[in-house]
Length: 231
Image (cartoon, helix red, strand yellow):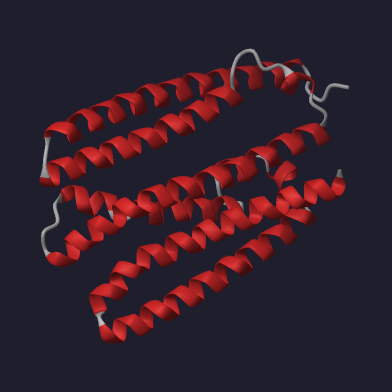
């Protein structure tokens, strides 16, 4: 049973082609950035080496995201042409769960780099690379939170497939867990700040990142368990 007429099929085909080409461009740009970063990191020291590490890390993130998007939008994929609404809903929700499993890994990978940058900033020895790398895990944590909340582009454009009663329940439970982590972490950071303010500032990227990671991982886990129950 099909759910697309000819105009919808043609429009979706063109959109998928553009996204596939864009994904390949992201992979190429990311590969170049990562390659240059690794190359410079081996021959530079100090701030230059840190900047090269940031370049390599961001490039690696682009490659991973681009490969995933290119695979989803690959020209050989034909299942979407004859998708029923339930199948499309399952595919989009599974795609969301994959994103919420991948972004926490990227966030934690950048967290180690960010902590070193924050230390340099607090010590007064920071360069431009430190100010770039310090907020990276926090930004990724915001991306995770946006996906969980349904604020990202796909959630808004495919709302009728991604918003249902179960999603609301999973969102509430995931955000509840994240809120507990955020409150506990902020409380600890406050207590530490009464003793050493620099330690409290250094702890904030960990608190914010772990709260975002908790929301994403909890949502993805609950969604997986709900799928098992339905099965």
